Length: 114
Image (cartoon, rainbow, N blue to C red; front, side):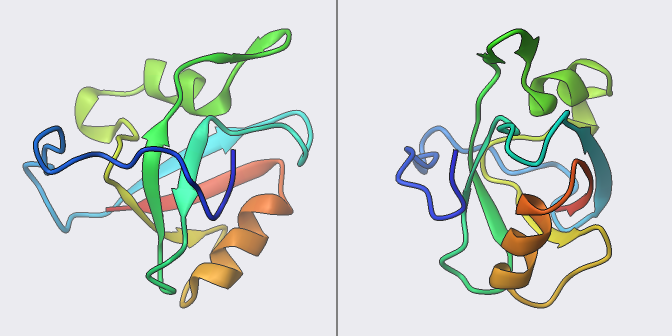
């Protein structure tokens, strides 16, 4: 799990844009420690947002990853998906660097996603 990921990003053939492209939704992820993985591989190369390269539905020793727990609890239209953009984290927005800092410094994350 990384903020500058080398994980495979969705190819054009595999990526399915959201029906409501551009609409924002909020996803709340909870983890036990700021050091625990979220289950998201993120890329910050556009310098404004965090691009979700891959949502990992796997587990962390002893528990499900927060992204998996969140996705299991919401309607399909609100699930985190490969190809999403995180535009705000806990009220922080404006730069990918600031978003990455916010992701790495909190146990509870309020993500604004499009």
